[in-house]
Length: 142
Image (cartoon, rainbow, N blue to C red; front, top):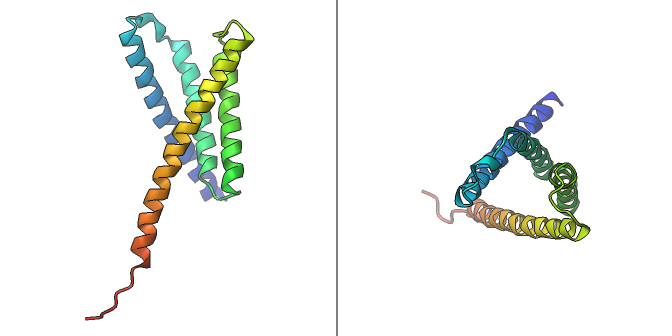
């Protein structure tokens, strides 16, 4: 049990750090092109770090074999959407209207669908190649 818990924590921190690095790089690139250097502040980065660690925990849960894949994807989406709403919409007041909030949620859902489609598409390709390599049986022995 302790070994599984430590593995879950390791996966959470790894996924969280990868997510934080990618999002931070994206924010720096966007702020550079917008010529807005004061956009990157410590509170925003700490909020992004918290969001990244929640994404890391959700991703570690996604790639365990505890439940059916469809259930894991729905739980993963729910956790990440809740974190997005709490950290970036509720606490920050970016959208001033309900329509703005709905549009942000739809954009987030579309981005989630594209990213998850790419992740599981690549995963299926790699798993198919591994399965093809396993199924090979030599017909002639030396």
